[in-house]
Structures are given as structure tokens and as C-alpha cells.
Amino acid sequence: MKLNRPQSDENAPRRASMLGVGLDATDGHTRLTRGKNFTLVGGSEQTHEVMQETAVKVNEKLERRGKTLDDVSPEELRDVIYDVVQNIRRD
Image (cartoon, rainbow, N blue to C red; front, side, top):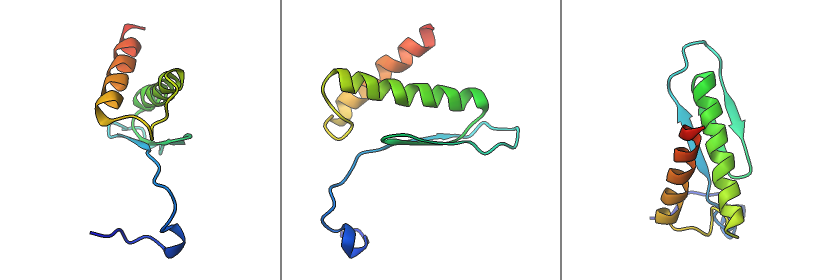
């Protein structure tokens, strides 16, 4: 199956990105945060803050390992996210 991308993008390298979606907002605010390789949408104020902290810390941890989101396997990314979430919960 071929992706329907504009011809100018045919040779562009694929870039990995994280997407966070919060579904618990009840205050009517629309929250959107974009970072180097992540987009976070929605959520309550608290949920959105946790998503932001998680995305930033995942990037920091990968950087300390000398890697980017493009370089890691799904299993390694899972482990990094798990470690970050566990550390956030302890704080």
C-alpha cells in the first residue's frame, strides 16, 4: 500500500512523533502543545501537564542515551516511557 503524500514529500525522511490525547477535559478549554517531536491535544489542565512532562522527560532520557525517537525500537521506547511515568508518579 502506498501512502498518498504530495510528490514533494516522496523523498522526505519519515520522522517519528509522539501523540498524546487527553479526553477528560470538562472546563471547555482547548489545550494544544507542540514540541520537537510531539503533539499533545486536550485533557484537563492536570492531564495536559502530565502529558507535557512525560513527553519532555522521554526526550531528555533518549538524549542522555544518545538517541532520538527515530532511533529507538518500540520496545525501548516502551521501557523509557514506563520509567518516566514511574518517576513522575513518585514525585
